[in-house]
Amino acid sequence: KDIQYILSMYYNKLEYARFDSNVDKYVGYTEYGVKQANYWNNDPSEISGRRAQREAYCLHNIDIWYGNP
Image (tube, rainbow, N blue to C red):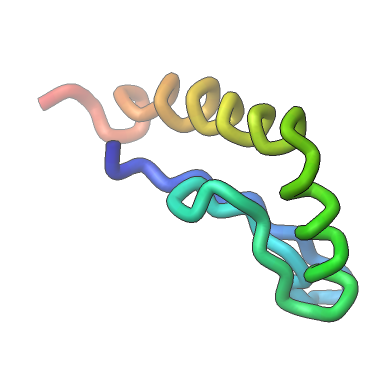
């Protein structure tokens, strides 16, 4: 529940866009990044794919990383 999946996009050491599972959408940080984030946010398959990545990667591995107390 408290797991956050973040996918950051960089070009030339500058972050231009990021997907954050807490916000459940892409956020752009540059002019190009804002345009790309708008494009990705309007593509339902892109958003559902990122949600699936959170489920497949984060939730699947949480016990491996933190153990089961």
